[in-house]
Image (tube, rainbow over all chains, first blue to last red; front, side, top):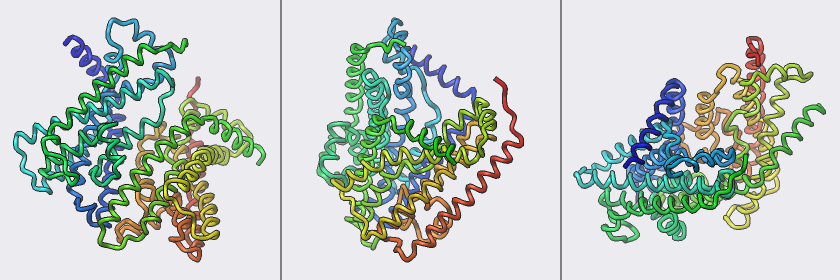
Length: 266
Length: 263
């Protein structure tokens, strides 16, 4: 519990320091918001041209889009410290972290809570809200709970991916662009229902990087729609748990990476 | 001219050093391309209307996009940004060279070297395994190459203009975001321009952004037939001239009120 309080304190400091530069913060958030709006516009353009995507309508797609973007925005802002980890290795600053009587993961996690991703968060929430009202969904308490559960799973999953990205730096020193394929690329893929993809691709994002478990499956349950692929409804409710397990696994990999750490000596 | 050639080649060699980054980039591009292709396959399987491009054309267009990403003016030249922030512009002014031409050359190198490094392996992979098609005729291929040269100069003119605007804004992030949005919308990188609603097309056709990617790619596909190549290439060329002229003007204005911070 003490650890969590320390983390909260770290993040509180980070947030306050960002709010010192209020104009810069507002401009960056607005710019980022604009880009995500344009992204969604292009989905709209395709639907305007094609009508539907294998029986899915634009509001139904918007539902997936909203969920995955909210989860990504939350996970990415919270795990910013792991995103910025490569200079810590390069400069040898990680040695200092090792000297402190706290876990390294906690200290890296506490580096920064980025606020500028608030643009993506807002836009995701707006798109999700629009989708829910366009589909005429009735929200029972159970469904609110499932929504929160889904977003928690999704946030944990993206957090885990960031932890992995940081862990790779123990070996490569530089942070590598290929993790982008799973984070940004994963978000892009999960904006559309996984039923439209080829089998190997869907399997990879169910069992490898379990993005489908925190977006596609629970979103089906939230929409009250049966899976065109025929998976049972109970699975849709349980699926977000995989996101939490994924994060736990990634933290294990992190600890293993720390044991293999060799200082750059600078 | 010799001096500019030397700058071009030095920048080129520096940027060609990062092979590891290029490999990681290639992986990401293949991944993104595959997702985009699968989404289009989904749309084409269920559509009842006749889309403006065939599926094979869209697939080829997508891989061209992944290959030519480096040509797009996503950001200001980081070196020029540092020069402006640190006051190094003063040294630049001491050189016996035309400043705009110097910066333009830098931007030219910044856009061309990574593109060459990334485009060739991406195109080779896409032909071999990912369903990309060859252009329908030699004329189309030549027009594509010509239009890419044009796109390179247009892109450098954009980068130079954005970079000079830093003389006012220092951080430049605000304008950068706006331009990125316009590029995403208007260049065809996100979606081929013919897919846009018909009422929006005249506007997009007028703007300079399509010269960066959509024009070369549709010339490659023969979607813009070779007989109509001249007007679109002229459009690209005129916009390049206009942006160079504007960039020169902005730079001249900026230098007149330039105050170099000591240090």
